[in-house]
Length: 472
Image (tube, rainbow, N blue to C red; front, top):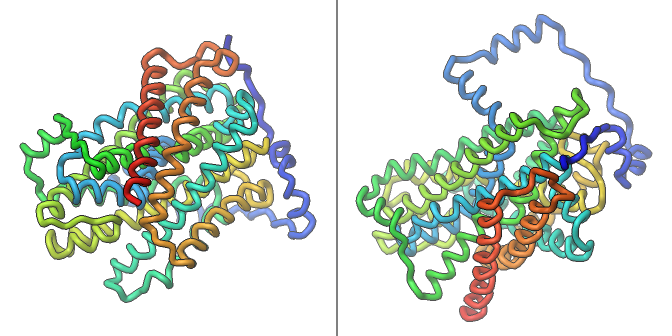
């Protein structure tokens, strides 16, 4: 039994939004954009041609899809802080976690992508169709709370990162509001294709951490041993950092963003073909995209731990945030390494903040039965953009109230740690449901990986709560 083919009409989708009538009543209609003259378009094309290397890079970026953006957004400032803390506190001892978490991360994100591709709907929509509304509502609420707190920490981290790049000339307090407003304006004003291109370009900033790992020249034999031979310490601090790594690497917002992004891409193609059921070629392309994205995410994670372990741990320096790591690198590894680390931090934040806000908005929209998308304008899907704005405003409020970002990230880790296991369990059940997936149900290996990570995350959540209570 195969999932039925579906037709998508943008006009029908936009009418479902309850705020649409209010927006249409109070805002003037935008005039249609005029087509540029042919001569102007030819000059623009000639100017944008660039070198062959640049064109190759652009073509490569175009072939990559939601998986790469999702993987890169996983290395947000809060994740960078966790990996930096692991490297500075425990040295090379946690490098093996990058290898361990990779197959689980790949299985989860690939399953979310497959569910979206074969149903033509986002994750929250599918969960609401299959499970009790109250249960799904709790999951969505936990996601929104965790994302909002995470947004506050990431906004503050970006502001501090920019301040570092200006050598303290620009104060972080001056930047939090402009950064938030600028990113929200980008999402509202730019077309979907332009937003996606910007997201893809921002993923390149994460190569700064690969460069940092090369610059600091870690010991090769020690690195290889720590990578392939797991080291475990039965102490509260070590267990806590392992739990934090799992919680940061496999976060609920990634599940919802991956599925919703796949649906957006599917609907973009459906505007011409009126068909959302994917071909096998599209499925293989999606699987390759997710593979590249998750691999990229784990390489960046590995390099952050490696760089901070090689430089900071050897000098007895322990950090709790990404900005502290960037500052600590300067006197030991040189200002160049510190600047590169800060550049990666700023780029990661600019990518992660819209993804965090967008995943929360998608989850709320889908739970309410709406079908808004970033492909739509703010007039067409006002509820989606209103939720994104509210989430970013909530994160901005946390920075204005001077809430400790380290404590905020601890709360976020607890909320994510508690929310992830039930959501993973629901995804595993959904992926094996013949009524939902037809003959495209998850295979045995993927199903085993899903349930294994569900159990691991459950144990991690319990351990996180216990260690947090014990520490307090």
